[in-house]
Length: 390
Ligand code: FAD
Image (tube, rainbow, N blue to C red; front, side, top):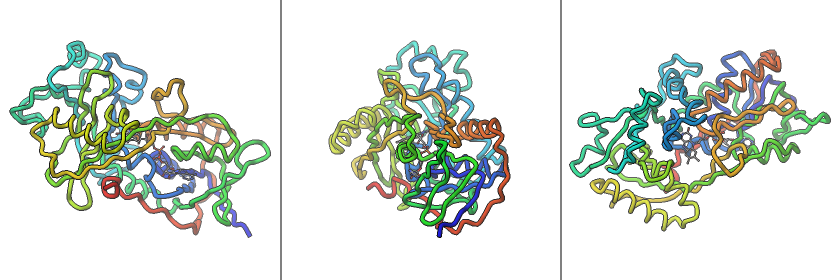
C-alpha cells in the first residue's frame, strides 16, 4: 500500500539551489520536502570554487555585461547572511577569504587598467600594493599588479552543512524518485519507494539531473546545456593561501586559483579558469603538466615539487543558450505546477530563491499544509572533493 505525504512544496535536488530555497521557504512558513538522489552538495556545488562573484570576472573585456550587473549585489547579500543579517542565517560558516583577487603577471593590457580605475568599477576593484598584498605575492621576484575585488570565497561544504542544519526534518534521500505525470500535463506526485509525495508545487533544482527529471515527466522545454571543465587539484602541506584570477590575453581568466583545507591538514589548490575549460580535451597527465608549467611561469617562487596532483572532470549544467554561452542570471521557469530552475552560479542561489518566492506569490501559493514527519531516510552531506579526489 502506498503512503501519501502532503506538503506545500516538494523540491527535487539538494545542491546549493535546492537547499537555499528550502531554507527560505521554511522561514516563510511553507511546509517542504526536499528529495536528494545522492549526497547533499555532491553535484556541482561542493565541486565549485566557492567564489561569491560580484561580476568583475565578466567585466574583463572592458565593459559591464548584464551578468555583471545582476550579480553585483550578491557579495553583500552573502556577507549579510554570514553576519546573521540576511535572509538565510549563515553565522558560523567558514569564510576562506574576505576577498578574491585579480592579478596580472606584469603585462596588464592598458585599457583594462583604465577600466579598473573607471567610475563603473569604483569600490569593486582596488589595486593593492606593499603590505596590503596577499602574502603569496610578497616576493621580490613578483613583477605584476594585484587588484582586490569586492568578492569573497566560502568553504562550500560548510555552507551545505549549515543549510542542511536549517532544513530540520525536511530532507529525504531516494536514489530513484519517480515523477508521476498528471492527465493535465503537470506533475501528480513524486514516488519514493512506497511513498507518494503530493505537493502544491514541485521545484526542480537537480542541476544536471533536471534533464532526466524533465524527460521522465515527458517535458521538452526548458532544455539544458552542459559546459564541461577539467579542474586541476594540487595538494601539499605548505601551499600558501591564494584566491585569485590571473589575467591572460583573453577576456576570461587564464587561471583561477582557490585554496581549500583538507581533512588531513594539508591544503589544496583548486585550479579553474581557461586552464580547466581548455583542459577538457586533454589527458589528465597532459593537463597536469600544463598546470605545473603555467604555475612555474607565473609564481616561480612557490614550491610545488612535493605536491600530489590530480584532475576532476565536471560539467556545469545550465539552461540551454545558443552557442553554449554562459547564461547571465539565475534561471527559473514555471511549467504547469512545476518550477524548473538552474542558478547558473552558486553566488546566484539567493537570486534564484527570490524568483521562486515571487513566482509562488504570483500564483497565490501560500503556506497551508503543516510540516509532517516523513519517515524517509535522511541524506548525507557529500565529502569535500579535495578529500576524495586524490
Ligand atoms: P548541483 O549542485 O549540481 O545540485 C543538484 C543536486 O541534485 C545534486 O545533489 C544531485 O545529486 C541532485 N539530483 C540530481 N538528479 C536528481 C534526481 N533525479 N532526484 C533528486 N536529486 C537529484 N559558481 C559560483 O558562483 N562560484 C564559483 O566559484 C563556482 N565555481 C565552480 C567551479 C566548478 C568546477 C563548477 C562545475 C561550477 C562552479 N560554479 C561556481 C557554478 C556552481 O557550482 C553551480 O552553478 C551551482 O553549484 C549549481 O547548483 P545546483 O544546486 O543547481 O546544482
